[in-house]
Amino acid sequence: MTTAKFVEGPILRHILVMSSTAAVGISALFVVDLLDIFFLSLLGEIELAAAAGYASTISFFTTSIGIGLSIALGALVSKAVGAKNIELAKRLFLNSAIVTLITSVLVAIVVYIFIPELLALVGATGRTAELAESYLTILVPSLPFICLAMALGGALRAVGDAKLSMMSTLAGGGVNAVLDPIFIFTLSMGIEGAAAASVLARIAVFIISARGVVVKHKLLGRFSLLEFKQDLGVIFAIAAPAMLTNVATPIGNAVVTRAIADFGDSYVAGWAVVGRLIPVSFGMIFALSGAVGPIVGQNFGANEFERVRLSLTKAIQFCVVYVLAMSLLLFLLKDVIVSSFDMKGDAAELIVFFCQYIAVFFIFSGILFIANASFNNLGKAKYSTLFNVGKATIGTIPFVYFGAQWGGVYGVLIGQVIGAIIFGIIGIVCAYRLVDKISQQGLVSAGANKQLLEDDAINIDMVAAPSPMPGRTQMAQLDEEPLCKQLAEQETRK
Image 1: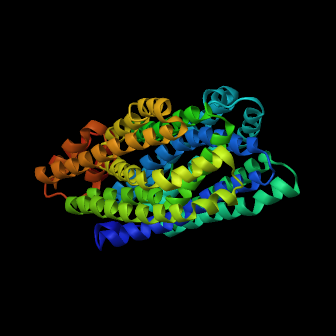
Image 2 (image 1 turned 120 degrees about the horizontal axis):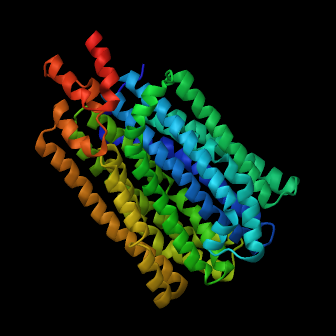
Image 3 (image 1 turned 90 degrees about the vertical axis):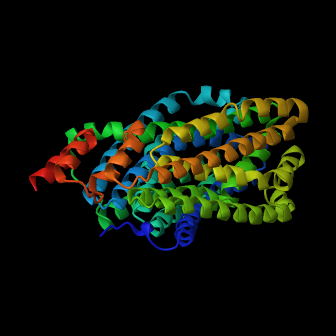
């Protein structure tokens, strides 16, 4: 039986368990991405590493759509679970998954058609562009599998089953790690082999996570077209801003890649290694943002607002300690990293500069991740969009541009860091103020929760939360929300 396990017990323990288990899975996949670069570097062509860098920029954009959709699914399901309304959790899961499938198919079609134009936009030219196009032509059609896999993983975390979510991604990483050398070297497929291995890995993650959601947790309800139409507004109230929020990050990354491309393919190759080194090194922080969401969501659904605030504080403390430790490790291993990937000249210098001076500032990116996770699960997904889009535009473009003018390729990285610092600090301050506002208003009744969430049309937490109000009054409030009408009618019939 699915229960709200995060509304009691030590917050830090929940954060550590959820983050560590998710990080193992996330790191497994990104380690394989790093191995892609390693294996391709053994082929002796700098263009291959650069092509992987350009391709990953486009791939990052497409998968960010799936991340946004998984955030919506996880936020809605966790709130329903926190409110002890499992039927609503099943309904929201199914309808959110259908939205994820439809959206990912449409995005895959559009991106596939415009692969050459997108690569040109990020600065890929000549043979490097051709190699990147070959990679994406194979990888992009598998987008629906990875988007659904991420959504299913969000559902598993929403019900507190971080272990199974971890196992699914671990399995995907294992498939990729085994098939990479076979396809790249044994079958002489080169960069196309790396792409093919990634496709099969995505399918593996989807199959395992789907089995967990459907068989183990029995979250798959019966489809109703009427309920689907009713839920679209609620789903997109989180999904639309969450997608915009997550798409903003690869857009900002594309700006940086384009700026680095002006200095040559060698720097882009170094940036490709850095781009895969970041999620491997800081996978725990990427996982932390996903771990905080369900914890905040369940406690919000249960009206435990002090625990919501404590969740933010503990997450930030963990983020700072972890990033400091990993940054020190990167500093000590910088020469080993360069030699392992056989990077020389400009590529090697870029990697060393990142490990020495830039990595430690990932603290501020992590803090913004935490703030955005809280916004998405407190019914203020638009705040998350505002900060991520702001960081990707006014927090990136001018800083990167002037950084390149004044400091060359290293100025590009410094400019990106400055924007992350500014938006990370402002974002977490706003997150705390939002939680304080909730606490001060004493939002412990269904009616108060409705007032807080009406801007985002997410009122699921009051559907099943205990209420001291008479039944007729409560039903009248529920009637004001399309999502809750049917449930209110069911309650009346009882």
